Length: 161
Image (cartoon, rainbow, N blue to C red; front, side, top):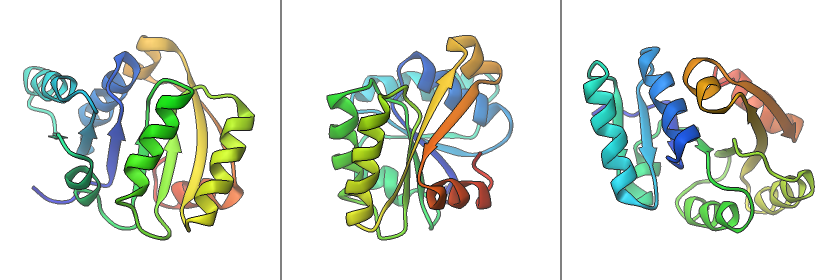
């Protein structure tokens, strides 16, 4: 498998449908979820829906290492403590200059706190709420970015907006 440019951690309804949407458009994507059965389920759906270019990983290190550098990791996990836990798990494998994009609908003060914490580690962080529900994730969500201008420009420059 070649390294992917797009990757997503968090495979509940929204994350799974967004990952399949991206793969359906022909963009290879790496996926990860703490509950490995969600990874297997999403890989199976990708096969059934046209053998889509979607690659599942059961451990965070392999997931992060499947991504082209500079890395941009999209998170789609439940707001609150699960976001902090996922950030800590991913950041352990990321390198200076890599970027985390939080696609959950998080409280702006948490986004600002996380942005500052990631900046101290040499990582970029961008909060990007998504609206449109399951249908939006599948067919075209509304995305609302917030965070550092540097992180926004970084993902825009790499064609990930």
